[in-house]
Image (spheres, rainbow, N blue to C red):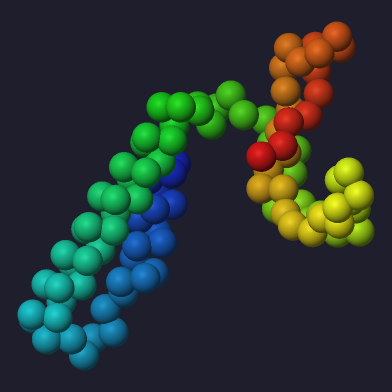
Length: 99
């Protein structure tokens, strides 16, 4: 989670960077917005990682587009959010899962 927090802070720094022309009140408001965003984002990934530990996920792909296929005769277009290696799946005990 330490790596995620460093990434989170870097994104917050970029989003709420002062330009130098802000008043004291504006700087306080920017700092409050930044702090609230950090708290909400941190809560989101902490809750997610209680369900799924990212250290145990082996990604094989992200944002794979689906085009030119059909399922039961219905044309499909879209995106597979992620593809990961699956352990203990089926008779071969390995495979891929999608989300």
